[in-house]
Amino acid sequence: MPIDVTAIREREFPWTARGDAIFLDHASTGPLPERTRRALAEHGLRRAEPFRLTADDFFPTLQRARDAAAALIGAPPGTVALMTNTSHGVNLAARALPYGRGEVILSTAGEFPANVYPWIAAARERGADFRMLPLANGFPDEAAILHAIESDPRVRGVAVSWVSFWNGYRFDLDALGAACRRHGKWLFVDAIQGVGASDLDVVRANVDVLACGGQKWLLSPWGTGFCYVRKELVTSLEPKEVGWMAQPATSDFNRFLEYDPTWFDDARRFEVVTLDFVNFAAMAASLSLFLELTQAAVGARVRALVERAVAFASANEGVELMSAADPAHRAGVVALRPRDVAAASGRLKDAGLAHAVREGNIRIAPHFYNTEAELDGALRLLSG
Image (cartoon, rainbow, N blue to C red; front, side, top):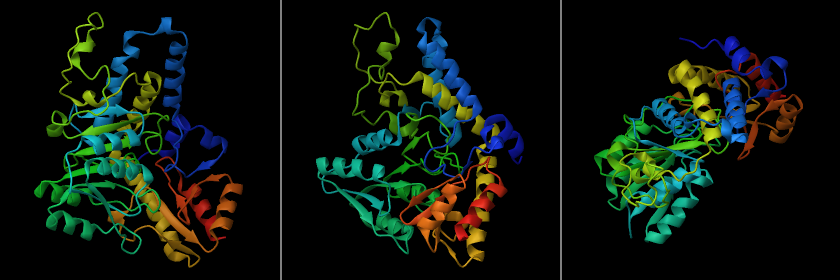
């Protein structure tokens, strides 16, 4: 069912009706829906006066956040751990996935630094090689990556961003995951620029580990996110950071001194607590909006807005499309290059249109509650 944009704006984003701003920068930091603001206020008040806290404010809150994140990406129960940001999940993968001396972790040029530096450091420690393949015409060379997976026995795993932060290129994860599985290699995905804007089924895509922060497309607070670990991998990976509640033994608060280092047999073994209960209650509230609307409907709405921006660029000689021409490789991020980027960005700022400039492009990132009129206004300003 299509999203009722007017009703959603009135109920969850009332500032849009006031005309405070037109927000087209969800690839940076997303706004918080009203339900999320209420969750922050209600849980925050109880935290401020902790004698008001109940048992439900603690570990059941975290479980609701795990369950919502799992449902959003098609993950089985017990495969999602809560993380404070994407980088935490990248580090988990870089330190725990199997590879060793002389082996290669394959990636691509154009990656966001959060999905580069942890791999460089971890590979150096193990005597492995983190290899970034060159771009082809400004985009990841999927054919070259697939060829390396199939032909180079030194390649142990692949680490990519599902969606590029600067030009919006979206990997065909199904093809990439299938190739990795056929050839006995693992696949890590940084999904922060994709989850919330596009449909994803991590099981179908054969993803081994996925990391995603909540503060962008998932409209959640800073300091929230999650990591998915394939069910068959959970018990074979050793956590490199050890939390005091990664073991069932500490679930009984009356028997802390009976130390038993046996890990949980689910993804909680990768969590380092104490997590921010208030912010994760808010993340669960935000994710409930996506689950109510359905990711299919959200994705369809985002795609429609992106196609509108692409059509505008195609019809205007003064604005060059820097995102992929093939719709199969587009997500919510649209990169456009007007003749004078600085002047165009200035016009957008003067008009109260939130956007970003990345790698010499104007980056527009509309979400499901944005209107065609808002997007059209931004595009007109781009072309001068």
